[in-house]
Amino acid sequence: MQPGRAASDSVAGSFGGRMTGTDTQDQSCVIVGASHAGAQLALSLRRDGWEGAIVLIGEEDCLPYHRPPLSKDYLSGSKSFESILIRKADAYEKAGVDVRLGVRVEAIDRQAKSLALSTGETLAYDKLALAIGARVRRIPVPGLDKAGVYGLRTVADIAGIQNAASGAGKAVIVGGGYIGLETAASLRKMGLEVTVLEMLPRVLGRVTAPEVSAFYTRVHREEGVEILTGAGVSEIVGGGAVAAVRCADGSEHPADLVILGTGIVPNVELAEAAGLKVGNGIVVDACARTSDPDIVAAGDCTFHPSALYGGDVRLESVQNATDQAKTASATICGKPEPYAALPWFWSDQFDLKLQIAGLSQGYDDLVIRGDIAGSRSFSAWYFAGEKLLAVDAVNDTRSFMLAKKLLTTGTPVNKSIIADPAADLKASLLG
Ligand SMILES: Cc1cc2nc3c(=O)[nH]c(=O)nc-3n(C[C@H](O)[C@H](O)[C@H](O)COP(=O)(O)OP(=O)(O)OC[C@H]3O[C@@H](n4cnc5c(N)ncnc54)[C@H](O)[C@@H]3O)c2cc1C
Image (tube, rainbow, N blue to C red):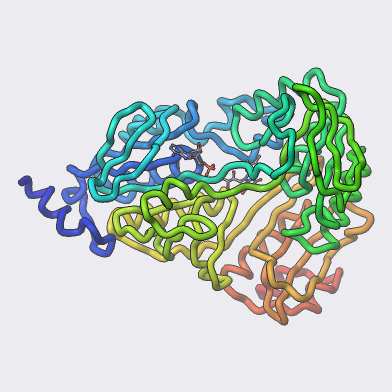
C-alpha cells in the first residue's frame, strides 16, 4: 500500500484529524449536485488542500449557474446565460475538477463507498458531498400536467416560460412568496397581465411582518399586478393546455400561463434511501457532517443547527449554500470549523431591492424606520424582547450593512434609537 493511502486510511471514517495533501492525493471526493453549494465545494476543496480527485456531478446539462436571476433579469431577458454562470469552464479545469453534467446519481452504496449513475456506471468515492438542493413543491390539485403550467427552478423551466410568455396575454402565479412576487414583477415588465393567487391572508406571510406584506401588496398593485389573498387554488382548468385557475371559492382566473410559486421541498430521497438521517432536509451537524462520517452535505438540502438562533433550520439562500459548502470543504480536508455565518438574503422586485439580515421567526416587536406606507424605502427591525433578530431593508443598503454588523457581533440595540427618524444609526449604535 502506498504511504499516502495508509495515511489517509487512518482518517477515513472520521473527519476529525487534520489532513495533508499527501493524505488526500490518492483519494477521491465526489460532489453530487452542481449548483451554488456544489460549485463552491469543488473550488474550496482545492483551496483547503485536497490533492486527490474531485468529481462534480450534476443532473442539469449545463455548468453551475446563479439561480436568483431566473425569476429576475434572466427571465425578463436582460441577462444572458453566460453572464449568470457561477464560474466559467476554465475555473473548474484549473482546479482539476472533473465536471460531469447531465448525469444523475441514482443510489449511494455506503458499504462499498460507491455511487450508481444514470449512465449505468458505478463510481467509487472516499469522501462524498451531497449538494442536491431542492425542487418545486407540486401542490396536490388536478390539472398541473396541462401545457402552460411551469415550476420555476432551472434554466430549462425559464426556456419554457419565456416561450409561453411571448405569445401570452395573461399569467397567473400561484403563491405570493418571494419567487412568486419576483416572477410577477418580471412578467409585468415583459408586458403581461399578472394575477397572484395567495392562499394565506397576506403575501410573504411566512417570512415577513404584516406591515411588510402590506407594503409589497401596495407596490405590486401600483405596478398593475392583481394580488388576491385567501385564494386557495383547487384546480387548473382547460383542455390539453391551461385556460384558467379555479379557486376553492369557485372563482376562475383566466390564464395563458401558470407559474407555481408554491415553495420547494428538499431533495432528501437519495440520502434517505442510503440510510442517512433526514428530517426537514438531510440532517447535518455544525460542521456539515451527515450521520455517515464520510459524507457531508451543504445548501438547500440540509437541516442544520443554527449557531446564532438555536434549534435546527433549513435555509434557502445563496449565502447558506456558499458558506455551508465552505464548512463542508474544511471538514473534508480535516479542518472542521463549525458553521456560524449570519443568514442573509435578498429579493428584487420592480425598483425595490430588499436585503434581509438574520431570521425574523419568533419576533414579538417590530420597529419601522422610514415611510413604509407612502414611499419605496424603509427598514423593518424585528425584535424578540430587547434582542434584535433580523432586519428587512428596502432600498436601504446602509441599514442592511449595519444590521449585518450588529447581528454578527451581537451588539445590543436600543429600540428608541431605531425608532428616532433623526438618529444617525451607525454613530449611535456602533459608537
Ligand atoms: C427563481 C429563484 C430565485 C431565487 N432568488 C434568490 C435570491 O434572490 N437570493 C437568495 O439568496 N436565494 C435565492 N434563491 C435560492 C437559491 O437559488 C438557492 O438557495 C440555491 O440555489 C441553493 O443552492 P444549492 O446548491 O443548495 O441547491 P440547488 O441550487 O437546488 O442545486 C442542486 C443541484 O443538484 C442537482 N441534483 C439533485 N439531485 C441530483 C442527483 N441525484 N444527481 C445529480 N444531480 C442532482 C440538481 O439538478 C441541482 O442542479 C432563488 C431560487 C430560485 C429558484
